[in-house]
Picture 1 (cartoon, rainbow, N blue to C red):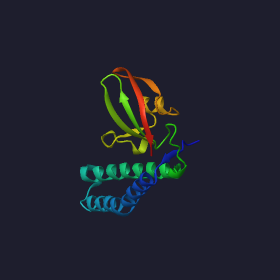
Picture 2 (cartoon, rainbow, N blue to C red):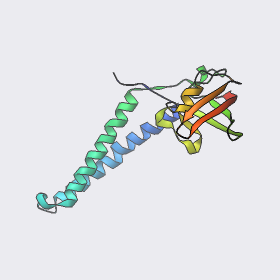
Picture 3 (spheres, one colour):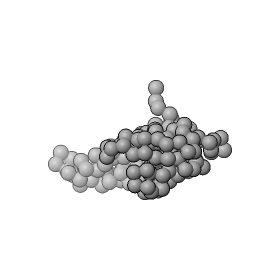
Length: 157
């Protein structure tokens, strides 16, 4: 059975827009590139034709991936998110006890993760350690660099 992906409405729209662009713009462009290369003659020694076919194969694979992801996705109803404990879509402000710095992360699905934007994938060690915890809790997280102690200062959405 396929794994269900939980996405925000924004994340779902982003994937849907990417899929629509691939189907309506990139797929016809790949077909045109193959037709153009085919018109240049002998296909057995035509590197341009081979490259165009390979690019089309990769595009079709990505389209199939996106279709599968979207078919197995559920949009999260943000109005049902609790603010008293950490869960997906929670915005969590933490105090890193190792370096005394505050950091804020939003826990998101794997597809929406972007550390530069403060979006932490739910499958990461930090997110896993935070799930279900409440404001004031201290968690220890084992990461490749060692153990980090985080105190949950705030939970919002």
